[in-house]
Image 1 (tube, rainbow, N blue to C red):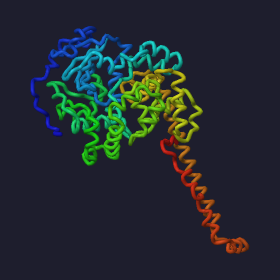
Image 2 (image 1 turned 135 degrees about the vertical axis):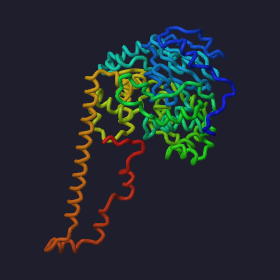
Image 3 (image 1 turned 90 degrees about the vertical axis):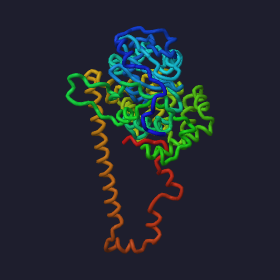
Image 4 (image 1 turned 180 degrees about the vertical axis):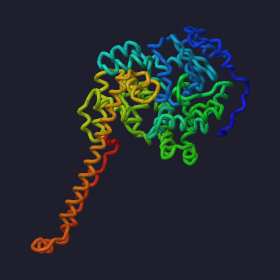
Amino acid sequence: ASRQRPAAAAPPPDVVAYAATCGPGVGTATSSTAVGGQDAEWWDLRCGPAELRPENVLTPGQSFGWKRLSATDWLGTLAGGGVVLVRQADQTTLVRRIAGTVTETEVRRYFGLEVPGADLAKLYETWSAGCPRLAEVAKCVAGLRVLQQDPVEIVFSFICSQNNNVARISLLLDRLRAELGPLLCPMPPGLVAIDDAGPPAADAASAPRELAHVREFNALGAVHGFPTLEALAGAEEATLQRLGLGYRAAYVRNGAKAVLERGGRTWLESLRGMPRLEVQRALCELPGVGPKVADCIALFALEQHGVIPVDVHVWRITTRDYEPELRQAKSLTPRVYEQVGDAFRKRFGDFAGWAHSLLFGAELAGAARARLPPRLLQEMDAFREEEKRAAKELKERRRAGTEEKKTRKATATAPSDGAAGASKAAKSPKAPKAAKGPKAGEGAALKRPAGRIDLR
């Protein structure tokens, strides 16, 4: 697919001119029937800040396809091919269709507003009663819902997330869309993506970051949808490598083939009604998917609201605030992984995955963390420094232990004189060979089990 800016078949909506008539403080807009209308007027989701704040939801982490346009506006796509503009107003959230067909149900479902029992204000209150730290975070980070996204896009988004940072994940997925995805519309004139963190403050001393995914998106000048399973499965691995996927290229191509062999999108959607651990096991059969990636897919696309994707940030939260005895674990075995998830589930109930997302956002550098009180930030930073010191000390002890073993081995095998030398000469020549290593069949027990993550 060409990366040249496409020519518009018809003049796109003049979004900038229309936006000027609708200030960020507007609390109501036109009726819901306008969402799919050709006039593409603003539509009011009718949910206050306690239920939804786009700045806390659309920032990369759950989804990597939204582009920030200003302090209050984001541009993104929905699974059906609709392109929408989302505006964070003072007392509500506004949506405007840019291209394609968009329905009220689709928008509300995407933002998790149709999930039974997901009254976020009540959930925040319940969670806060069981966790003092979450209570402090909740006061600063309002309206953080879990998006209900397209399972195909989420599978490959999180396969690409492995050993990557948020900005680079966004870049790789943008390139996948531009190379293999359908063209949805040209970028409306006057709209320009900016840093995910938003425009710099007026008194900011530093210039905004120059993010590669923002730069390439603006240069392309078009909005693409996510590639189909067929497009991903049919892509040459060399093409995916050229886009920067590295070793993930094989996972993406073969993963798409594996999903198609199981029934494609229908198979993925069928997982929504299955028990949590069965969903995890089914997803872990796909190339490039381990427990953490499987749980991200389940949480963000398969309505598994109680799953806890465990990474170093979640491990830190658990061992600092909930289960300090887990610090003794040397690796994240399946049993320990489940214990971490249970620490959240027993405190936060059926929507533990949503509570996890709130706490996870506070751990990452970004707008959410920047709003936390200084005392809480100092506590979090102090624990991280303690972790670093402990890890350094452990590494030094391990190095010293290895050197000591080498010294003992060298001493034990060194030639000696006198009776010791005579004794050694009398030994069977086969004895040293037999003592070299484990017996046949024991080597596998010494290998690191698949799925483990070294915590030390």
